[in-house]
Image 1: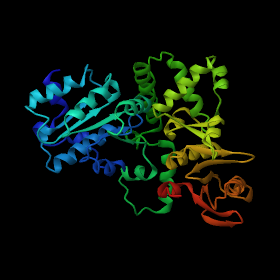
Image 2: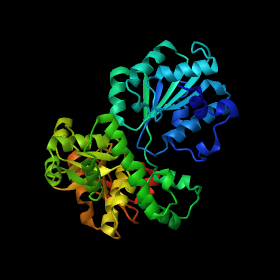
Image 3: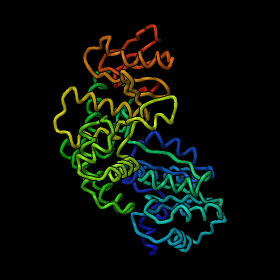
Image 4: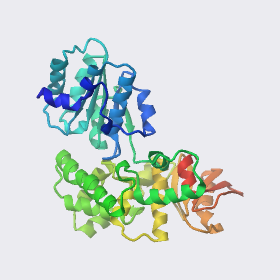
Length: 416
């Protein structure tokens, strides 16, 4: 490859710093976790949904290394959005340009959108095993494409982290509002967060611009570019229709046969498409909680978008009832839970064995606690959480204690 391309990517070889336009002043919560792993042997993998800030994180890490006296020419960045046939092609050019020997000193090599390089896992393994002084930091936007490769080839050699869309606290932080904010302002910010979602680049944009960004910059790139090129899927219209159906019905039960009939497609194809959309970080699938994991696998599942902006990109009119479903989606993504529970009654979320029900409404009555109480009795759990619009109190019952917390406060604390 041409040396000019590497020099274009690695401006700090000459200017000693990462260009300011590539850095954001606000650092995601994952930043500190990443920096603590920079001097460890393992490869660091950052995966996550498109446009959540993986590349920015990489540049922030590079700047930190430069600030801490790493030799500027010993830090390499390359994005595989630029086509190359092999990692050798990149690293051979780097060694030639900078006159480097990987057996000497410490090297930090940042490889962005790694999933676009065919056979990347074996290529990295070769360098990892031959040159212990190289530290690899890689990123990718396809969970399945990366996870399967690392399981097969890089087991024990890689530390994997997921960068999710902005949490509510990060949303506040990126707006530069500090921590001492009046409650009335926090509630207003929460409503803004529900509609705006967690993509950093659309904060402060108008509604129409946000919708266009999510549809064209995020969804279309994933459907028409990533999934087509990586998995050879050509039925992009069905992929788009699935996203719209799920976004306008967040929390719907996942019934492959029903979706196949609705879209006039084969059931197996629908199942494959759902998996690909999930592994592209667009969708989250929730399983019905059971202590027996095998029985969990056989039960119906529920499905949600991974960010509220995907919902609002398709849903033009949002009434109070539907707003509650958006809140449910947001709470699920904040708890990182993979389970709901349904028996004779239902609980929206089970996180670390604790039931969490979302009732985003003005008044909480006794029947709103029914699902939580049934779960607590059945599984001998002494704690439950009810997410509310405004109410905050403790309910002491024969089954245990149920904490009522406003949604905005739960999202800021995110502790069960």
